[in-house]
Length: 133
Image (cartoon, rainbow, N blue to C red; front, side, top):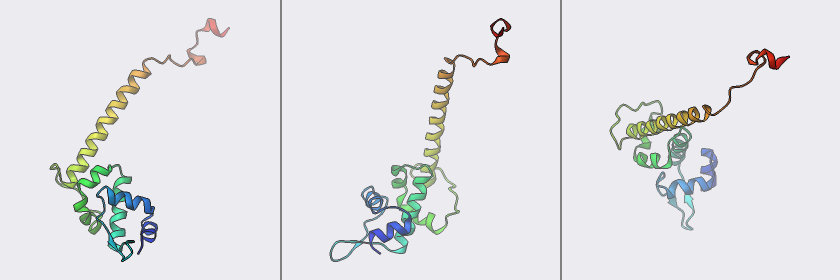
């Protein structure tokens, strides 16, 4: 199938497919004699896997780091990562989780610092009686 059909089948755009190819998330597809890209059903499954990973918080760099193992995810979508060695798919996922935890901690600390500068909300029950009269 041509790029537009493959993109539609995977729920994305032809531009996204070109981007994935340029970034190393997808191998270069076969080409027609006129140079048009041709995709198979397996390619569409890979595109869907890439989109799922990106949609679940991995970065393009994360997916590229484990792009050679996407076939395992496609073959068994319910498979869990069991090892966390750097450079493995589970190591990539663990690194992303660690980065998210660090960002959550940073944002929580920022929120706490900012909230100390807010005046407490004034409610009728908290207002002194002399002000209410």
